[in-house]
Length: 77
Image 1 (spheres, rainbow, N blue to C red):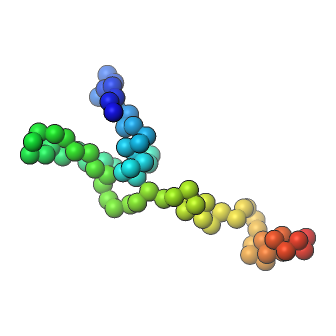
Image 2 (cartoon, rainbow, N blue to C red; image 1 turned 180 degrees about the horizontal axis):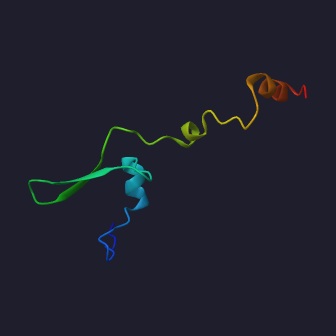
């Protein structure tokens, strides 16, 4: 994969690489020079990318408490 450097020295990290490393907006990355002269990009911290299910966890909707949700699932409302 390759990318182009902008006039400001910025690059876009390909989506496949961002997904693999768990890089999301606001993530910090680290560049290290390896012994053979290559540059290694790593994500700072040990945050693992969340799955699509983990991203939805805890979102039952605005204003609904547990009793209201249970009533809706039982068809009581």
